[in-house]
Image (cartoon, rainbow, N blue to C red; front, side, top):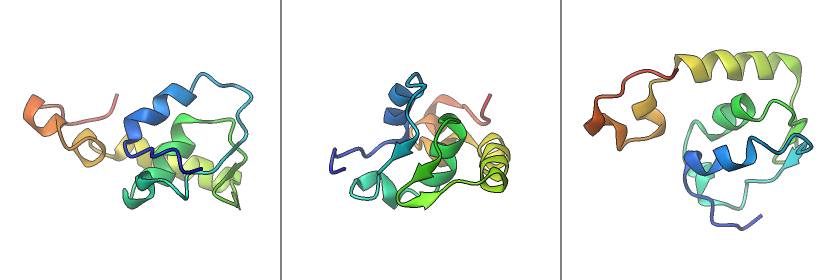
Length: 88
């Protein structure tokens, strides 16, 4: 909490923490990004709870599909300049 996490890209550093099951981002600027929950659940598959809310299989599947459907410029506005258009 209150770690001043403001960019979705910062969450990639957490993706190697296999034992991370509960994460609180609610007191961070990242919550202003409309995609933060979808993105977080998609890249951190071992999470069981995010911001006091349990993650069920339905939300996990929906997040995974939505994340892959999102264009990178929606997540990283700076990528528009680089011509990157779709998530891998």
